[in-house]
Every structure is written in structure tokens, then in C-alpha cells.
Length: 266
Ligand code: NAD
Image 1 (tube, rainbow, N blue to C red):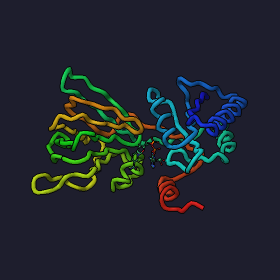
Image 2 (cartoon, protein in one colour):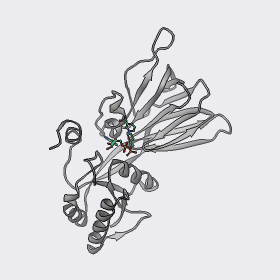
Image 3 (cartoon, rainbow, N blue to C red):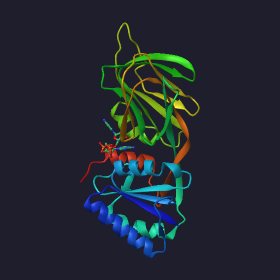
Image 4 (cartoon, rainbow, N blue to C red):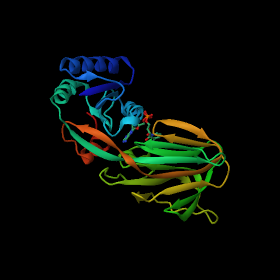
């Protein structure tokens, strides 16, 4: 089996990376950065997101696992103390794979018909540094509302516990193939009206955001943000690709939610 390790880059994470690499190589596993079967992220959830995007080209054959070197992460859920146990589990392979849905985002420009396609593990957010965003929201080809406000967040079920949660969105179990649209400070008065509630769209229900006012948009896909002008539309739907998590022990989603948000730290 081929494995790669993505470290956050600080001393602690680099040391843990070196230990894992050494032990797994001693167990005759091959360190291979291009097309690994297993990617081990060492750091935090941000490192895990980075690892996911680095190996976006081989999602079909690559599984991910996260070790945290700071606070307990949502994706990075193995502690540094458990690393030896994890190494033995990995060396013993085969392991269980759990697949969860991703978000596909296609940004089309007005001029030249160019388009950018992204996959998000957590979410896409669309904001502007330039006043309010104003766009028509279409769902499944039908006009739903005209949104005016700070922006919107479109998240995956795995990302429903991230930015989406801070916006008052619901937590969705990742076995459900869905995306969730949450508003950021929508303007609601006698002139402008939006639904005001998070919307959960099933697979094949595409959401299209069509800007009505020319703005420079700040579009964030997980941890990276890009500025866009001349945007014709932003299309969001459940992606055909999926993310694969390597599971070496049961860690049910709701336990993860409880341990991250409800249980108090000692
Ligand atoms: P960061 O380091 O600021 O991370 C923000 C926090 O989000 C961290 O505590 C991380 O553990 C947590 N997080 C990430 N994914 C999560 C998930 N799926 N469920 C629960 N918690 C999760 O920023 P970063 O490391 O660059 O991570 C980018 C992510 O930060 C974005 O994908 C977005 O979800 C999140 N974010 C949250 C807010 C907010 O809650 N107000 C604002 C901006 C970004």
C-alpha cells in the first residue's frame, strides 16, 4: 500500500509525520506522494482540507485520515497519543472506507464563456467586499428568490458543522446526499424578501446564483478564497465525486458532533 503524509508544517506536526513515515516504511508500506492509497493529514482541520485539495485528482482511489496536533478536529480526530495504534491499524490493512458527498461549484464568466469548476469538502461562500451581493437564486431551473445581503454559504453535509453551523444552518448526517444553502445577513423589508431559512437540496437539484449587480465577488472554497469579476452564474450541486475516509475504528458522526460541540474539555 502507498501512503503520503501532509503536515501542517510546525515542529510538532513535522515530528509526528517523520515518526509515522518511518514506522510505516518499516512495515514495508511505500511512501508515494503522487498517487497514494492513503493520505494521512497531521495538523488540524485546515491541514485536512489542504490534503483533500492536494489529492483532488485521485479521490477515486485515495482515502484520508487525520491526526490532530492542536484541538480535537472534526476531520483530524486521532490524537498524537494514538499514533502508534493508528500505525499498527494502517499496517494491518485492509481498512474500512466511508464515502461522503462533496459539493460541485461551477463559476461561469460573462465574457468568453470561461468556467471554473471546484469541489468543496466543507462549503463554498460567496461574498463581496463591495457592498451587498444581489443575485437571483434559481433552484432546479425555476426562480426562487432575489437575494440581497452579505452573501450565502453552500455546504456539504460534512461541512454542515463548520461555517454553516455558525450561520444557523442545520447539521446534516453525511449519509444524506444533499447540499445546504444558508444566508448571511439577508436584507428583508418591504422591498426585498428572502426565505430566511436554510434550504436543503437533494442530489440533482441544482442551485444557480445569477448576479444582478456587477460586483467583484469573493468566492471561498473551503480554506481558499479567490476574487471574481464578470460573473454570469455560480452553479452548486452535489458532486458526482465523493470523499473517502479511512476508518480504523467506529466513530459515529453524532459522537463526533457531540465530542466537538457538546462535551466540555477537561
Ligand atoms: P480556521 O483555522 O479558521 O478553521 C476554522 C475552524 O473550523 C477550526 O476550528 C476548524 O477545526 C473548524 N472546522 C473546519 N472544518 C470543520 C467541519 N467540517 N466541522 C466542524 N468544524 C470544522 O480556518 P481553516 O483551517 O482555513 O478552515 C477553513 C474552514 O473554516 C472553512 O471551510 C469554514 O468552514 C471555516 N470557517 C468558519 C467560520 C465560522 O464558523 N464563522 C468562518 C470562516 C471559516
